Image (cartoon, rainbow, N blue to C red; front, side, top):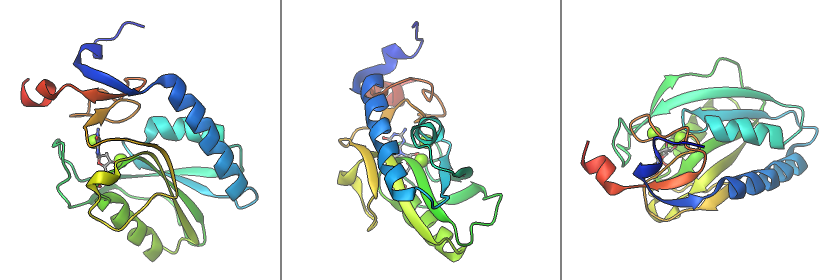
Length: 184
Ligand code: 5GP
Ligand code: MG
Ligand code: MG
């Protein structure tokens, strides 16, 4: 496929084939944990939208989907530490078994904030699923219950993850060339 963005990618970290295989495994694992429990897949926008679409189809349990949108980066490549809800839940989650679906767990600020928020809203249980885990940069005591891939401390894009709202449609996970965020 032709791509206008390929020349901005330093190297591919996770290929499309690796994503497909791992997400199939993750779906099967969630099936075993949530069969008969009617879980709610809760995607954290915008970064999780591609992963969410593939994960819910890889896990054929009776379930529904919901989204929340948060922002903490404001176009920087490191977290500001402050998390703001920009689009809130559209349904009551009291008594629900939540499967939080995130693109990447980095400092842990976002998920620490959301976990507390969903507890106050009365969730019955919270399971954190993240496609990527960058444990080297964690500042909050938070771990994923299920993670797709551990990644090094580099800024990655693709498969939903952006830089300045772009590159979300790159079909694999790649490291962005540093000159892209210093130049332009
Ligand atoms: P945290 O709050 O754990 O520091 O970061 C959570 C959010 O920051 C992620 O959901 C993601 O949107 C963004 N983020 C963290 N690391 C990266 C990265 O390497 N690339 C991109 N594109 N976003 C990241
Ligand atoms: Mg995210
Ligand atoms: Mg982002």
